[in-house]
Amino acid sequence: MVIRILPNPDEVNRLVTEEFIHLAEKAIRQKGFFSAALSGGSTPKSLYTLLGSDRYQKQVLWPKVHLFWGDERCVPPDHPESNYHMIHKLLIGKIPIPGENIDRMPAELEDHNRAATEYEQTIRMFFRLGAEELPRFDLILLGMGEDGHTASLFPGTAVLAEKNHLVFASYIEKFGTYRLTLTVPVINQAANIIFLIFGGSKASILKDVIEGRYEPDRLPPQLIRPVNGRLFFIMDRAAAGKLRNLKGE
Ligand code: 6PG
Image (cartoon, rainbow, N blue to C red; front, side, top):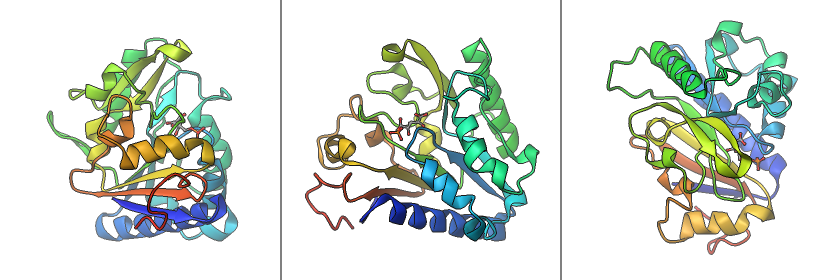
């Protein structure tokens, strides 16, 4: 695990944007395409804005990039809470990426299990997976909530132990709603996993995740351990405020 602590969110965004560009360039050179599953919530908004800016977007060969989602709220794609909507507004609408390279979760379907199955099929077809195979995304971007959830892997939910599905419709009791999420085995198969974390309000839970006891049911990010990939926690100084070793690396 690599921990990077930067003075402020702007510097974190610059680092992660440059890492995205570097990983995309490398994957495209090696195998002709780059696959990334993006995160939602408020934290990555400024990152997507930066990546879509004139200065940076020119450095990515977008026609060779395929975008997926790590999780999604069960709302239509034009809903203000939709992660697809947010990413479309800040990034997709600004870059020359072909529509067929955008694989959003079909979260508007009333049958949430069917939505999960359909997205699983989308992933299986894209990666040409056999029955027991898992996809290997080049990059999975993750955030973390103040309650310790990541993607839509919430503390105490059954999806944390899910081994048979790539995508799962998970009922989140405190919101009284379902969310679609990639499952732990899929995330752990990625070549690169980046947690992006900002702000002092997440400092305590982040300390527990990184330095505390192994309690994955309360701290789902502890389940994220790449099988054969790299794991980064990239944060601003405020989020790192309670870590023992402030230098981190
Ligand atoms: C979502 C996410 C989620 C997010 C955390 C952090 O759809 O909400 O993908 O896992 O990363 O909730 O959210 P904030 O960035 O808003 O704190």
